[in-house]
Amino acid sequence: MLYGTEACPVMSRHKHSFDFIVTRVFMKIMHANSKNVVEECMGYFGFLPVSHRIVNRTVRFLDRFISSDNMLCTLFKEAAQRHKNSLWTLSSLLSLFCY
Image 1 (cartoon, rainbow, N blue to C red):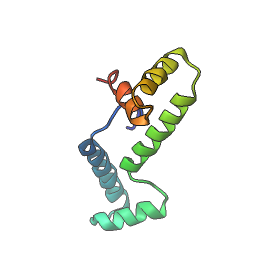
Image 2: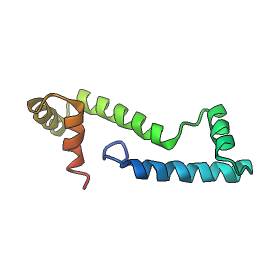
Image 3: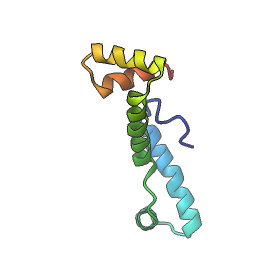
């Protein structure tokens, strides 16, 4: 379900949709009808909401991307350095190839 979400920007409404899907699955598994109860159970099981997982995956991806010696990655890093040297710029450059 999360394949590729770290490399492309994900809108907040899509993150909420992912969260809704997982919450409904947990509701079915736990036989519970309350979102609060399910979220508490997810916390006890150490299951992060999907929106948090996407953020963690994106940070990890960008860290690996920046530390890579790959030629294509190096070209992106150089382009990002020319434009304010920020991760946000690197992320926006990567998003051009996702759409």
